[in-house]
Length: 413
Image 1 (cartoon, rainbow, N blue to C red):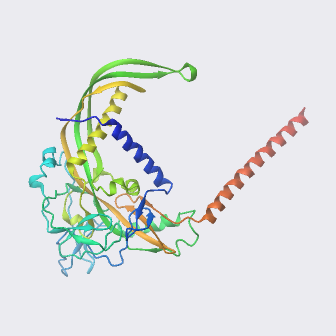
Image 2 (image 1 turned 120 degrees about the horizontal axis):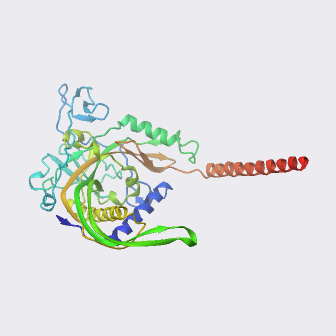
Image 3 (image 1 turned 90 degrees about the vertical axis):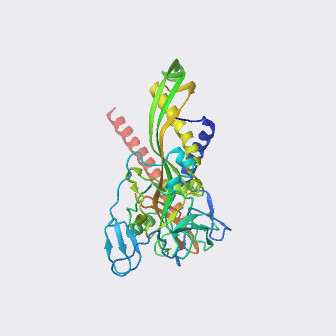
């Protein structure tokens, strides 16, 4: 079993930061990101300019009819030739329970589980993104920031092979429709936004995650309190207790990109159902970009242990039916640890409005969308005026009704 260290204060700070970032995204105040030249700050998720982007693929499959490269088709779940339209059936298997890397695998760089592919690693010199692409493909532009500062970095030797893939379920056409509906629903945007919007091509990217499963065994003893009454009569009754908390952990998910894990927009849109992970098959990545992990498994496990500690703490609090924990001594241990390295789908695009570029992300599994858009002060003040006018009218109507009621009452008297 592996001891889980106590870094409570560190993870409390992290949870508070995540809460603040989520609020910033909800109100359109997410952290700033650099533009394609790395100069003037522009708000929102990573920029994308795909005007000259080449088709990136990690698959060598060729069309049986014309010899062109096949790509994965979210609509059919198979492979399709975008040149002649031929299709090839693709059978995918779910990741079996208990499959994944052990802690020894993570610490020893997985040994026999290293990635076996003819792909190359591309690194963006502007935003730091790292991607896998077929060795015969051209570099193109970075799908995150649109920069053409793409360089090749050696080969993939030493990289761990993904455990599974969440295939794209939302097709490119569906993502386009989702974007159109989203842009039309921006009530405080300029009236001509949709008409004058110039959208770039949608780009599909697989982003990396670490997903942990384990069993935990935690002996504990402490002082727990239950609150009764209310107001001045409120009091807390404490009791001492000890016991054992046995808690399984399933699908504890951490982003495996050091750059994206700090991006509030990505955190908001990248909510996936990891129960639908398919066994890794390079064919599922055909025609899409794929970012390689920059947070290794052992580092991710250190972060996961802190989250597991908090989960166990909450579980014990519930077991003791406590409102407050005055003191607790926990000795958590983890066993049967399995770490799945999973790739998950995101559609990325951007649009230009009056010379300013705004970024949009669409979840390739759920269709959830997040992004930035221009605000019209005229429409904002108009909406505020309508709301204020409605409140005034309602207040006036309420006062008028009360006056009539009082007048009728006086007549009855």
